[in-house]
Amino acid sequence: MGNLHMVLDALLEDQDEAVLATIVQVEGSSYRKAGASMLFKKNGERVGLLSGGCVEEDLLQRISELGDQLTSVLIPYDMRAEDDLSWGMGAGCNGIIHIHAERITQEKRRHYERVRDCLHSGKAVTAVTQLDSSRYIFLSENGQFGNWPDAPLQDIQRTASTLHLPHFDSSTNMFIRRIEPKPRLILFGAGPDIVPLANLAADTGFSVIVTDWRPAYCTSSLFPKADRLITAFPEQMLSEFQFYPHDAAVVATHHFQHDQAIIDFLFSQNLHYIGLLGSANRTKRLLNEKQPPAHFYSPVGLKIGAEGPEEIAVSVVAEIIQTRKRLAVV
Image 1 (tube, rainbow, N blue to C red):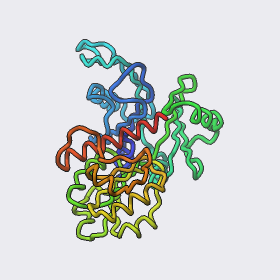
Image 2 (image 1 turned 60 degrees about the vertical axis):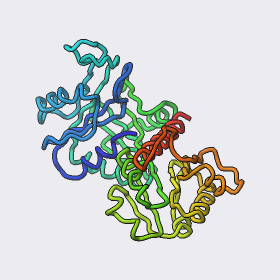
Image 3 (image 1 turned 135 degrees about the vertical axis):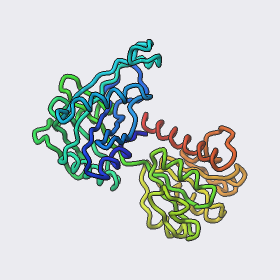
Image 4 (image 1 turned 180 degrees about the vertical axis):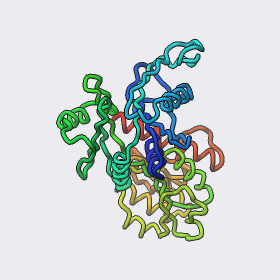
């Protein structure tokens, strides 16, 4: 998953001067793909990653040399050579990456606040930047905003609907990408074996929601990285919670009747992933001859021989990411 959510949070946590660098085009292969971003703050803090450490120091040096003169610049790095005197530095990435660096004005910072508000409300945003003019526009379900009043909206919408995003058009110097809300992972059950899963999922870019009917379990001290904690019995939570197609859910209450009720309800929802923690025999009894949907996974997690909560967390997060990637291709 992309790192833009983390970059946005860092950008908006204060009013410090900052430069946002984004890979807008890759020719050949590279460590990161188009759309990857990195934030350089005036206080020296860096958030994100653009390569395996090959270009970041040079990019920072160029940004520092330009100083206040930097508004918007496109910098290419040729990573194809394999000698130590070139950008390939022996890595043999076999590609050219084009990085757009822009100073974040207070106006654009305010617009990025609106972008984050859209994302937090579950709405995607299409971001369009004309790299040689620093003009930009954001398009969302709630309208458009930016500093490009005469933006070619028809061309942008046609590109966004017919081409794989992110997309860079060298003829117009226009970079278009779609910023999706964080994928949500809803965890049913707040037992100690779920803590590593919640932490790893949050670190991997998921918005984690933990729900349990036991107040002593469903706490911020146990789940500090969860975005939301819901203390309620399954029947109440399920009747009030709104699910979305890109949600993933893992059921692990270790209570047979609760798990059964949750699974029955989730089968009626349009989710992309439903996982059930437990043995194949227990799953068979829970299903009670009911035919599960294709996006139901049990035993949950990729088959990597995982043992213990930490390894199981790795297998589950990997499986959810895998299913998301398959969905994106379709």
